[in-house]
Amino acid sequence: MKLAVFGATGKTGLEIVKQALDQGHIVTAFVRDAARLTIEDEHLTFVTGDVFDPVSVAQAIQGQDAVICSLGSNELGRTTIRSEGTANIIKAMKENHVKRLVVITAMGVGESWNTLSLINKLFFATLLRNTRQDHEKQEVLVKESDLDWTIIRPSGLTDDPLTESYAIGENIQTNTSQIARADVAHAIIKELQDNTFVHKAVTITN
Image 1 (cartoon, rainbow, N blue to C red):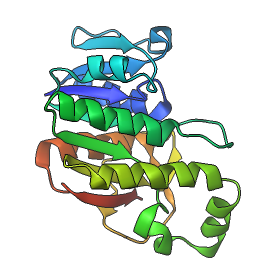
Image 2: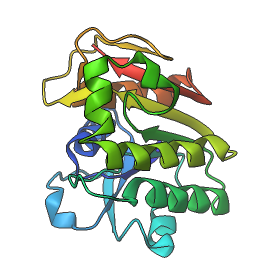
Image 3: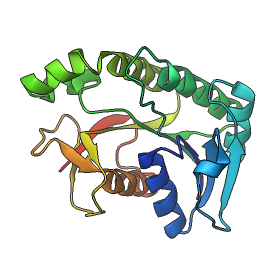
Image 4: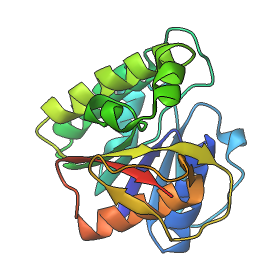
């Protein structure tokens, strides 16, 4: 499968790239700085650009079978990188007749808000307010597109190793409120193969 990965130099995006290559997929990594992605593989190519630039986004999407959006930011201030970046991805996918899209947002976005504990709701409503607002706009864009989309909502991300043991489904309750990035990557690649959750937004957690 030919996969374009946006946000490929982030911790989760990097794990997606690694696992996709390990499984024999052909990966196009969209990056602002190719030097930040040190993986070398004959099935890996780079498109260097800015997700706010529709031309470079479209370049990465041409000829792909599916697109994975793992856009994010470490900034806690107001940001539109997820929503505006995803809007450009959706536009380019339609123009290039690529239908399959998987987008990573977060547990607590959309209808999954009601699955959060009171403490987590307070955390999202204060410290992560801007991040959540950007994710909310992002999810609306995805759901209103006519693409074959899946939204993955991880609980708290960790750098723990791959377990392949996790819970995934719509509005599920969390046990630990944590999930390894490696397991998120595993679930995404599995979803692209199985298409179990097309047109669904699902939570993934331990």
